[in-house]
Length: 246
Image (cartoon, rainbow, N blue to C red):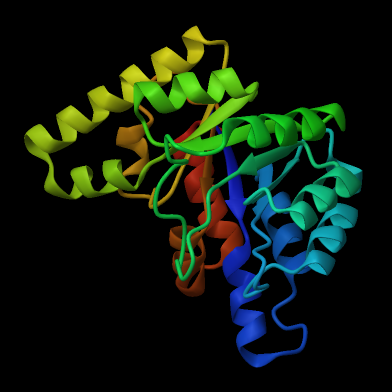
């Protein structure tokens, strides 16, 4: 079974567009947990345009009684305040992602010229707090080798290229799937766990999961968009069925 981690950023985006506390992030998390979601993801950006530090703590408190079955994943760029937040909250997992100025969402994995020594030291610090570390990478051999050299526990494969290939179908899809299979095999060969995320949805997820060896998928935008029409708990159940949890 592949674990589903529900990214609740969009709930915070909607709340922040009006101000106040509606819709409630904690209530959204509880709905996801009650529906059987085995993971919750948040991405507190520096500009606080969706998840805010207080949200991170409130969600941690809401998950405290179910941490034996629901994992908490905090993702973000390794700026000092994010690292401090992770070390204070001590989620199950921290996913380190690059952030480009002005981006709406993540656009690629870490570049090959990233300062490795600094990032490796941050990974050591976070792992020293008892937190599993995943590094967001493109499905390329050099990126996976680099993540292993850094001392990460897992990688998260950037899956937008797969989503675009799925839309094209045919040879593009076949080639993309083979690329991801090779990436997963390489990661497992290094002893790394494998997560995946970005633009996965109910249409393309089942095909992606024909790639063996994936531990977890993180899904937010598509899941929350569908939830507007059929309900959050119902959509979580739909995704759990695809991942094999139901």
